[in-house]
Amino acid sequence: MHLYVHIPFCKQACHYCDFHFSTNTAGKQAMVEAIAAEISIRKSYLESSRLETIYFGGGTPSVLSKEELQLLLNTISDHFDIAASAEITLEANPDDLSQSKLEDLFEAGVNRLSIGIQSFNEPHLQFLNRAHSAHEAENCVRLAKQVGIDNISIDLIYAIPASDHSILHSDLAKAFELDVAHISAYCLTIEPQTVFGNWLRRKKIQPVNEEFAAEQFEILIDTLAANGYEQYEISNFARNQQYSRHNSSYWKQRPYLGIGPSAHSYNGTSREFNISNNAKYVESINSGHIPATIEELTAADMTNEYLLTGLRTKWGVDSDELDRLSKGKFAMLHQQELSNMKKNGWLKEESGTLVLTKSGKLFADRIASDLFID
Ligand code: SF4
Image 1 (tube, rainbow, N blue to C red):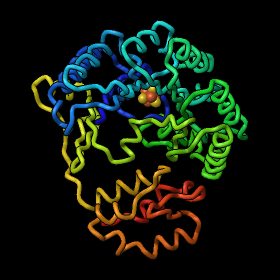
Image 2 (cartoon, helix red, strand yellow; image 1 turned 120 degrees about the horizontal axis):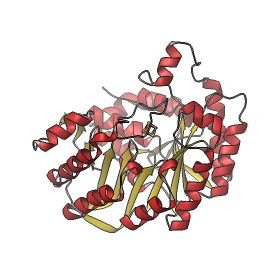
Image 3 (cartoon, rainbow, N blue to C red; image 1 turned 60 degrees about the vertical axis):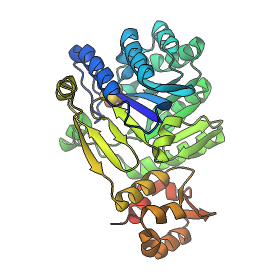
Image 4 (spheres, rainbow, N blue to C red; image 1 turned 90 degrees about the horizontal axis):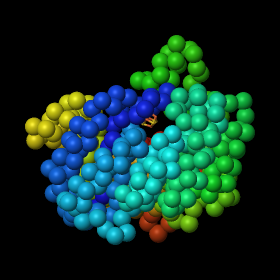
């Protein structure tokens, strides 16, 4: 089973980010206590109490002190059986990762870091309003390895406006030099409720150029493949099968429990969404109530979610499973569509499994939504 813990604080707001976080850390201690309380209230949500993965996401979990992280991990181990081989990931920002911080994380049991590097280029970091410098981005990976955390993933952002692709090439070259196990690469998107969204409305920036973004995506796929990174999900690349076990469990529709404000949970038949408001979350948990809305999933929801996440992965989607989830509706509705997609070279079928081709990966979400059922 899989546990996600959302830490909703960041030092500063990145210009592109629409995740749930607050830059006011005054309530951090109360939040950590509420999260610990939610862990204990919800210990029976999953069928089994054995955890294969734990993921601290955010926000920025690396803003937690050693004591705060320890409190959360102790609470988890009081209520769950953490497998000896469990993957314990913490999202971190380079400016938090001093040697002593990394030693604390390693001692606490964190064995995988997902570091929000985004770029090794100083002007690009400033454009995104990241809190770290290019030097910190590079240095934290070396330090993490020195203290014994080898399983390192870095996030990179591509399609940042530039006159050519040289910065993307140099970002990738730096990642190869640092020999990280895993790279998550996301296209810059401009969401309305962000600083970039505001700048776009005021014409201070241009929309992301789709042609430029598609070129960068192809460069990513080819350069990463040539350097031994397998694209096992549209935005995720791993060397030597060092996949994110936690995120893979989402993509394979495994049940998980999400704790903290804005966290989601899934038990195989419904999803729960915790409130995205720090003060209301703490207040509700302190009165013994989980502030979540529950959505029972229909056959169409389950089929469409399976398509949307599964088609993005190298494991693809299984035709029998699609028929089971859709109660036979998928095969009835989409034979012609599937055959057109195969003819167009976007999709291939191998032993009953549908997988996107390289050209299909360029518009994965559109292909999935064309196959949705009502
Ligand atoms: S550090 Fe991460 S969560 Fe926080 S504002 Fe930046 S991108 Fe968003």
